[in-house]
Image (cartoon, rainbow, N blue to C red):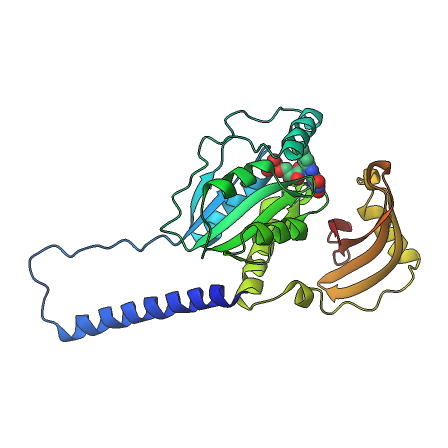
Length: 296
Ligand SMILES: Cc1cc2nc3c(=O)[nH]c(=O)nc-3n(C[C@H](O)[C@H](O)[C@H](O)COP(=O)(O)O)c2cc1C
């Protein structure tokens, strides 16, 4: 799946290297240039960040992708903006999802011919990408493009949204997705945190990492001890609405510790389902444990 992406990067590097090589050789072997002005050819822009953001968190992340890849950017704009309150937006989005009437965009059709890679950014709504992304997908042809999903969320939806993209766009090369919680990216140091994770994410893409490989290095699941429980309680204190009850845990040593808690979840008092909760505990004196994502 990542083969094409690596190939593209490799091919571009070879091309760039050969252009430099040719330029150097010409410089050495040719006499002084003639009087005509040299033709300046701007390098073709190869990638574009396309995103929707209701409240700015995804926009902040999109700017990090844009800067990291020196990409063009298109912010998708609703013809009729979502309401300003959370509860009203829930109602509008639910109606759109129930009817599959995706909202009109001012700029649904994006000129994608000149790009081989589309970084596609969205907030998670109802467990997957926000409705304006359906409008974008319906209005554009992503066949043959590398599509790199990225998202912001309350508690999770990164993997599920990427899976749905793969299903809807079987002719695109949909890669691993990057995601970050709203709480983390809107924190004071959120831009730095996200930028360094995005850099690591690009490293994972380029080395062809899979979801399974990213989970490597975790211990076996085991019962919680008092310290695990304290970490869990500290990291989930703002997520009472998820009704999480940890059942077992495994850990992975990084610069700090990653925890993977298998939990029972009764979100908004709904039926119990089993889910995984990833938590990061920084090294001592480097901050509090934080919830990274809730997902299967
Ligand atoms: C209508 C609506 C539905 C949402 N659904 C989910 C959800 O299912 N899971 C989740 O983790 N976050 C959910 N969220 C939270 C958003 O994904 C999160 O706040 C995101 O960072 C907003 O991005 P933005 O600031 O770019 O609009 C929802 C938010 C709204 C408004």
